[in-house]
Image (cartoon, rainbow, N blue to C red; front, side):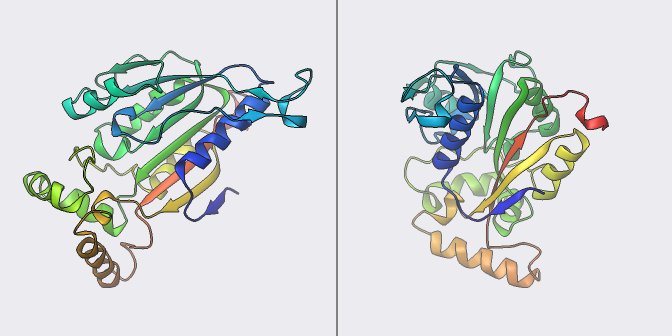
Length: 259
């Protein structure tokens, strides 16, 4: 059984994942693939020290974690500007996520943040990212749920109207508007089915309310629309959350899915 929790800060969860992997690998460098680094999320800095039993044998006291972060994202002007300004990424590549280089079994952590809902062939892309994960590695997927009230309107509002209303509804400096594709995999059931079919274990699952339109000057109106949608749909389009975060582990044994 996976663990289901409510709201959690992305930075706290990400740092805990890094610490866990650092401890499991006895303090060697942790390689991170940051997918969606153009979205302007929290900095990828894991600078905390580990000490005591969790520091691994032979290290004797606190030892800083060492990470190398590689970023990839689509080659869109708004995303390129953000990626080129980041100082927390050691290397990056922009392009079609179906073909951008992802070396196989090269990363301990693959972090996918608000990417799946804005791309086509999302399942194919997720398979490519999974191929880049080392056995025993962690895949963290954070996405907007297409079945939530917020996700319903994000994919139903026409693109010209989204562009016209973006500045009025979102906080200043929010990157976008980006495409709103929302293929079937961008839902809780979609990710669960993906993991089941590939022998992956969901170790944690978190929900949150974080849609940018809920945090802007007209956020009150957006929240009202989501609550009405929830009520009129009988709860099928929930307003209780709009984004879901999954922590997924790739098995050490490549044949685990057959057992």
